[in-house]
Image 1 (spheres, protein in one colour):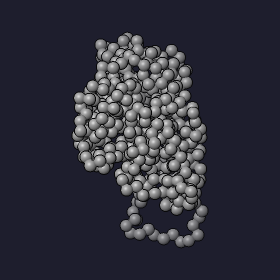
Image 2 (cartoon, helix red, strand yellow):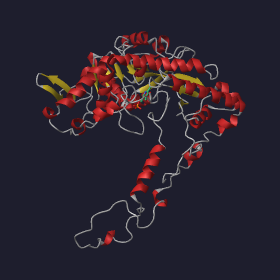
Image 3 (cartoon, protein in one colour):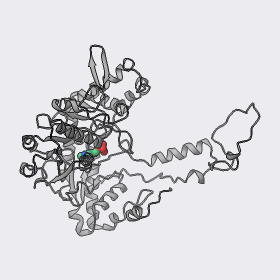
Length: 484
Ligand SMILES: *Cc1c(COP(=O)(O)O)cnc(C)c1O
């Protein structure tokens, strides 16, 4: 194996700011005051706040060093299944920081922000087009909020039909946000068991679909990284009882320009711009989860909406059937600019993105399946799911494998999800990684499988190289230290 990419040399210690510096040091120099000093008010007098005394360089080094402890897609491969941690091209950042966008106040009148409104309008149309649906709203600020929008639309549609319905069908492979979103809207989530090949079978849906069921929420491709091949037949079953079909499109990265969700029978779909459309995510930062719909559900989309007329673009509240407002102003605009820039720079190449993402995942699957258990040995989409079954006899678990990857300089994949696979290891390389990086990852995973067999302690005690060793997760949950 080649030299690992992990850091071994300059791993710098970093004390708290209070442990640094010395009395009287300052990080600034102000001009000599030309007025007489006045005493502080009584309640502010005393020793003053407990701020450390530091020079400028001490402060800069402190934060710069801390910033190097962070790991992101700009530092290395981040194969976190389900999350699509792909590279965000820097040109998108550049467009998002254009002063016309960053300085646009959300309360300026429409005639003074035509560019921003046009961007929202064009982005909504492009996203609907990629999905194969008719209209979209970029208001929701995350995938989960897109799901909530979708469920509110389901409820509004059925109310409009004069029939309240109480249940939603959700496959057992679903992301936890799916049943949560349904429950927030007052629906009861009914679990549908996945078939033997890891995908839904129409018979299972047929058995559960009734006139009290508002519809189904299907993640496609699903969280096992498999395409729900029976989606059309399932949609027919649901539609026959006047139900609606929701697609969780968080995995759209696998099927852009390939799958037409409208033709597959999907009525509502959410997209995660912070996954598929190359905008930053993680760390609780702003995201965007646009919701796309077929024509007959367009009246229910969140309002206000950007409309186009002879005079240009305007915001309209004139949608009496709308589910209303989901976000302050119009959503996370900076994220929209990045996604729009990504779509415009990629054009038809969005299809190549998906094809490469799928190719990379299948390559990893084929190269590792002799050493890690592959529960569903079929072609996958943009991610593949292994388990720790082969390592069980050495008392090595998925968690140990994940921690050992850190020693070799890789961010671990998603683990223990989806829940239907015991000890799941879910790998999503994305299209961003080169053949060399992927080969290095494969070699590392194979090395770890070998270590599990020959020296399990290496894994059980991992990670050894980073500053922070393995957390005691039980202690952390039982006795959380919240004061830092
Ligand atoms: C990420 C994800 C979500 C939730 O999206 P957020 O933007 O994190 O709220 C929902 N479903 C699936 C399948 C996902 O991968």
